[in-house]
Length: 113
Length: 112
Image (tube, rainbow over the protein chains, first blue to last red):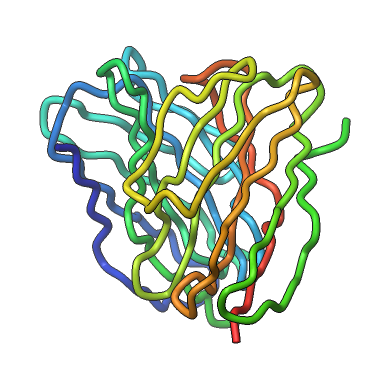
């Protein structure tokens, strides 16, 4: 059974710092992995989608990597800004017939001005 | 183009009542999935529909049901509401069942 873990649960950094958020999954047989951000009381916003055949994806100041062999994905945020403060969730899509998307519990990020 | 639209955004019900939530996916998206989000349990998968057929179902009691219409719009229903059903219900759509997921703003249900 696929389990997705995100550590740390919360992170506080000063503005301008580069940071890395971690996502681990127990079953390497995934179809893809997606990163989202969620602002309080809102829905999820898709940030990056990495297919299982890819090693990384980039969008602006965000870079996500995927290492299936070690069961890890990282989200790198460059030059963090207060507007980046949100909860970041990763989700792995199973490669079995269900194609279920399994979510981590998220990392709550606070970027201090 | 318009995103995923969920209605209503907020609602308050009492125990024992039933509720229906609606989701309109992004135009052209045929897959719709539903999630329940609570502070204690996080995001939990409810069900997924593709072309009016339920493809997957999470571990929720039979009080939770859903359907998808021919225009890809989806509804979920919760009968005999319990206090523990208070949550943010999120709908997401994608082009295919394994594609990138796009979420709506959610329907926040409070059961008193």
